Amino acid sequence: MAQAKSTTSKSKGFSAEEKAAAKARLAEMKAEERWNKNRAEGEKAALEAISAMEEPDRGMAKRIHEIITANAPELMPKTWYGMPAYADKNGKPVCFFQTSKKFGVRYCTFGFNDNAHLDEGRMWATAYALTGLTPAEEAQIIALVRKAVS
Picture 1 (cartoon, one colour):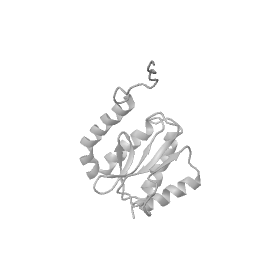
Picture 2 (cartoon, rainbow, N blue to C red):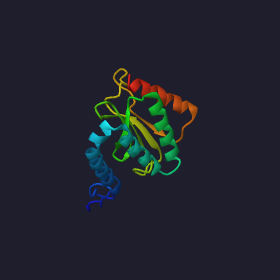
Picture 3 (cartoon, rainbow, N blue to C red):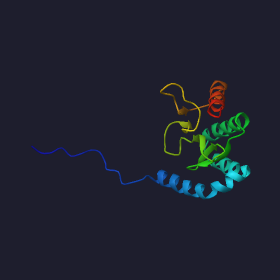
Picture 4 (spheres, rainbow, N blue to C red):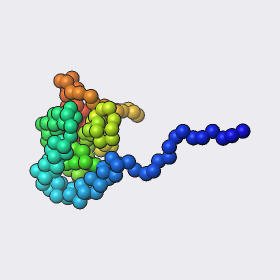
């Protein structure tokens, strides 16, 4: 009996997008000490990352930036893997926005890291898919961000 030929391709390592994210993260690690001392530098980097996005992602990222800076001013804007992120006083990202174009997916992601105070029981959401923002989603993001920093 002849063996069936596999139709799946083998991975050849990291994708170009993954390599670019890793390269961005290395540059961010070098800049983080400055960002942690100078909010303006981190915010500039976050806004540059947002400006580089295509619409409609750019509009969502810009609005999320406005929401976070207004409702959790203690979080420091910066970038994380080339995407806008908002860090605690120790420089660790609490939440982040990822454009849909970053890895060629159909939706943007707004997510939280483990230092966000979102724990609720034994299971809770830490990332949300976004295809648009209405006042309802904005209110949910405000509530989540406020809870995350409480």
